[in-house]
Length: 126
Image 1 (cartoon, helix red, strand yellow):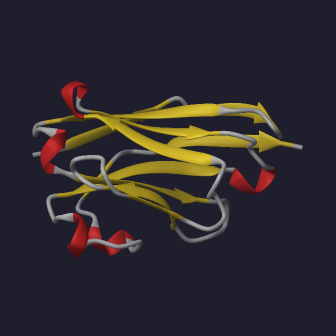
Image 2 (image 1 turned 90 degrees about the horizontal axis):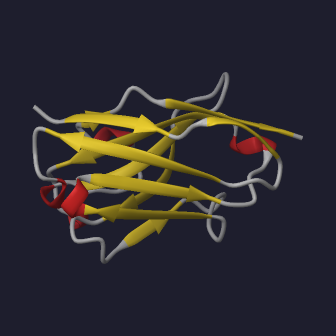
Image 3 (image 1 turned 120 degrees about the vertical axis):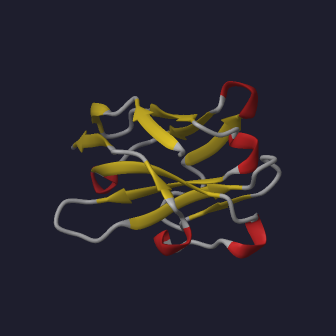
């Protein structure tokens, strides 16, 4: 049983930065393709970023490219999302997600991810 726990959310102002963390337990993260999703208020869950098991490949939503960076430390079973130049439109609950499927069998759909954290709130004020 894989458990994912996010941390690092909070209330910030536009232009600020935040770093989210996702700690995995129950399985080595080096065996898990990882991703971040978010759910803005009143909207459906959407893809933010994903990273391959070895960290060599990444993919980002167009809305966050150039501002967000996904990374992972498999030795610590932890994944990160560095969010720079935050905008009010980034306000959402952020979820980390994982799947044992390899990179080539996953995409930007939440349906491809089996493991989910409980979410952490990020609020960006203007």
